[in-house]
Length: 219
Image 1 (cartoon, rainbow, N blue to C red):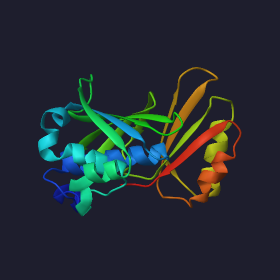
Image 2 (image 1 turned 90 degrees about the vertical axis):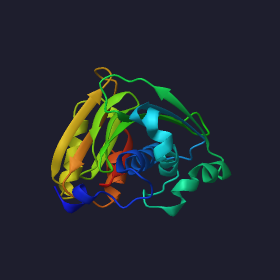
Image 3 (image 1 turned 135 degrees about the vertical axis):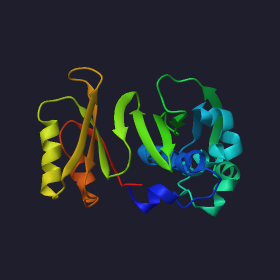
């Protein structure tokens, strides 16, 4: 535990869990989507649904989707800014099973039928956990840099990806693979001890059977 785990994050708002964590969840969804967001449908579970409005959770989530950090002074005006930028958004309550009380499901849509679904939780002190991306089970807590690779479940793909990490001098601290069917689409998430040069995303994208790569820094 470090001092930031004790005193919490620098932020705008009354609650690290309901405000700072929410903003970080929104920002991660924006990064993972990687395109202009035309519409966001946000489903809030548990404490997020019951007390989120009073804590500014709704505004924080939209601020994150706009790319704001939790300490951005404009966080409180995120609804107006989103509307000015042409982003539509709506909120709904949802009941999810076996998840943290501060959990959200974010569905993003772009101009050309692009879509992202992400589920994650604000687990305290501004820390977050993303556990589902487009119905793939993942485990991203952003305590370390991570790389997310969408690929076809084909022999040798994992070895080629990890070989690229080796070439960049990166040590793997966590690995998770999720696939929908043998030989079908799969998703791997790799935690790393250090953040490699951004060019690694380009090199991994060039590997046969890899369709998308996201490089994510620690939060």
